[in-house]
Each structure stands twice: as structure tokens, then as C-alpha cells.
Length: 202
Image 1 (tube, rainbow, N blue to C red):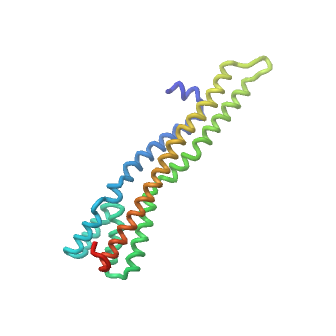
Image 2: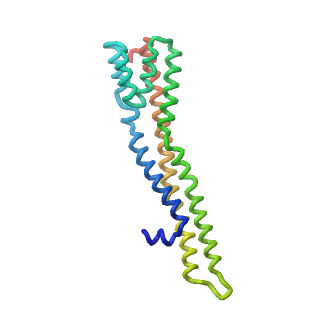
């Protein structure tokens, strides 16, 4: 591995840094964006059951708010239980916007890495080609310098694509997951509003 890095030359170091950041972000988002953690199964039913048993209190809302992103959205509705349906929906939408923003954390960085990694690889290729043509002399070519130029050109291009492809795959996967979570949270929050206003049983 070290011999490959040496052969690729100095342009490989920014790519290595980008790869480390991308792997760290992918692992962090895989841990954070689990469905059981974001939209826990049965949470809405539990909230409705507790509301029917003892109403709403600050302890219940506080526990719900730190429980999960879905809990934060539902807690926003419960905090405005004495208000009209429109006020409850507005508070839920505000909480939903904040939660959605939190779920998208680091995705911009991951998407940027996916976009610029091929360009960074292309930059390494250009550097390699410059060294390649720089090795040409009137008296003949330097084989070692010629081989080094080719290595810099090819390794950087390949490594840039190696970083960009999985980064783009995971970026699109996380975007789709977040969209699914947001739709699910919206539906459950609407059900909560309808139940609290007596428009449906559960």
C-alpha cells in the first residue's frame, strides 16, 4: 500500500484525506440513520395511550422530545394541545423542518467529496502528465521519470474514482432514507393531531 502511495506522488494525499473523511461520515450516518432510532415502531400508539390515561404533562413531553426525531415532532404537537388544529400543525411542521435539517447533517460534505474526488484525481493525472513530458529531453527519455509520471497519472485517476463511486452511492441512499423518514413522520404527526382533536380514534 505504501509503495502505491509513493508511486502516486504527492497529489494522492488530498485524496487520502477525502477518503478518510468519507468513510467516517458514512459510518456515522449509518449508525445515526437507523429506522429504529429515527422513527421507532409503536411510539405513536404509546403516546396516544399515555394521553388517554393521564393527559399531557411536562415530564411526558420532555421525555418524548429527547426520545427520537419522531418523538421531537410529536412533542411539538403535544406542547400545543390546547391550541387549534392549525396551530398544532404549524408547530409540528416547524419541528419537522428542524428534524429534517438535523437528519441531513454531513450529507453536503459527503456529496461534495463524491463530486470533487474525480476532479482531484484528474488534477493528479495532469500533474503526472506534466512530469511525463518534463522527463523528455533532447538527449532521450529518462525511463524512471517516465514511469513515475505514468504512475502519478493512473493511480490518482483510479483512486479518485474509487472514492467518488461509493460516496455517491451512500449519499443517494441516505437522501432516500431521509425522505422516507420525513414522509413517515408527517403521516404519524397528522394522525396524532386528528386523534387529539377527536377526528379519529387511533
